[in-house]
Image 1: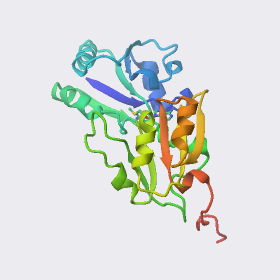
Image 2: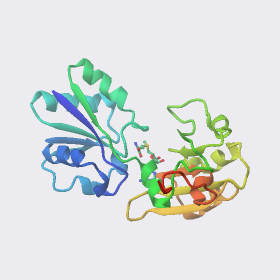
Image 3: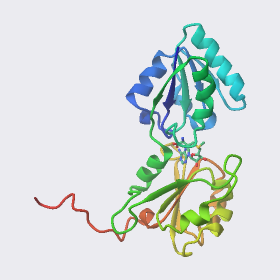
Image 4: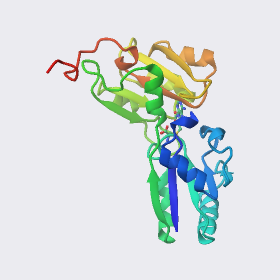
Length: 236
Ligand SMILES: C[S@@+](CC[C@H](N)C(=O)[O-])C[C@H]1O[C@@H](n2cnc3c(N)ncnc32)[C@H](O)[C@@H]1O
C-alpha cells in the first residue's frame, strides 16, 4: 500500500511536476486541499476526487486507507510544496502506523511563484543573502516570532498572514521605508502584485480587498535594485 503526497504547485496547472501529473493521471482517488489547488488540475482525471476542506483528519485517513486496501491508487494533493505549511506529518503518522508506505513528490511553492511574479531573487548579493520563511501566530503557532525574526534583516516570506497585514507590519522591527510586496494568487490568471513599504502596504492591501491566498515578502529584494554583481557572469 503506497500513498503519494504530491505538490500541486502554486496554481498554474502547468507548474506541477511531470511526476505529479503522471501520478494524478494514474490515480483512482485524489484527495485535494481545497481552494488553493487549481480545479483545472483535476479536470479529465479518471480518479474520484474529494476536497479535504471540512473533513477531519480521521475521516480523510480512513478514506485513504479504505481505498488503498481495495488496491486503488491514491494521491493526496497539496498546494505549492507539501513541506511548507502543509501539515503532512500529522496525516502520515497514523497511515504509516497502519502499514502505508509514503512517497512525497515536491511541488513549486507559492513562494517561488511569487518571486517569479516579481521577477526578482529572494537572495540577492548586496541586498540580502538570506531568507526567512515564517507565518504569524495562529492556531498552530502560539507565540508570534515575527518581531524577533525581522531583526535579522533578511528577506522575510510571510505565509498565512494577509488577513492580519496591519498587525504584521506594525510588529516588524524594521524601518518604515522597508520595501514590501504582496503577491495574491501567484501564477493564477487573476494574480495581483502590490508594491509598497511597511508604512503603506496594509492600506494598499485593504484597498485591493485582499484577504487570503497571498504571500507577503519583506525586504530590499522586492525592489530589484541595490544589488552587486555576482561572480557568476565574469569572463573566465
Ligand atoms: C496552507 S499554506 C500552503 C503553502 C503551500 N504549501 C506552498 O508551498 O505554497 C497557504 C498559504 O500559502 C500562500 N499561498 C498559497 N498559494 C498562493 C499563491 N498562489 N499565491 C500567493 N500565496 C499563496 C498564502 O500565504 C496562503 O495563506
